[in-house]
Image (cartoon, rainbow, N blue to C red; front, top):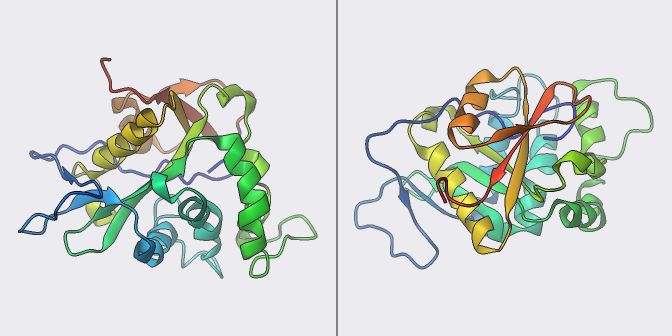
Length: 240
């Protein structure tokens, strides 16, 4: 997330599974023995993606005990990406067709912000109308962010035009799948000619910071960033 909260920094740590997870592309035939795999997002994953978002939205934990309508989280930080740029959304399939994690984002943040305002907000403003007063509750704080996509336009990260969000259900963290999701997303950006990507994370989330550091992200200096830290990296494979 950009601004007051974070939707991109909650992978528990860099996984160390002995065998790397399978990564499928759209043309691959599923293996005869189902196993967890990263694959492209499909429209029938939408409900699962929104559920993952809700269940990881409260500093990596379930947001439902803390918000009256936690559906505002996917409305702001997951659904617009699969609606506007589904080709850059990937899920971790548990081997039985169920998404248990995702990475999604955009190749061009300024274009995405314009599309978000013009094409996405009209679809959700009825359920989440823009507050007419300063936020008075946690729900209203997120609704206010929903209506302010321009928060994503941070001049200091302009050289990193893409951005991303990554979330995994807790049982699937620490097993190599976060790295597999991230590498799939970076490869997709690189193939599209996008040179660099950024994200923001809550600065206090030290396990997530360690995960991103191991994946080659570095800190981007942003004046007065509040509680978040901006990170970026090239989309090229490390060592190239």
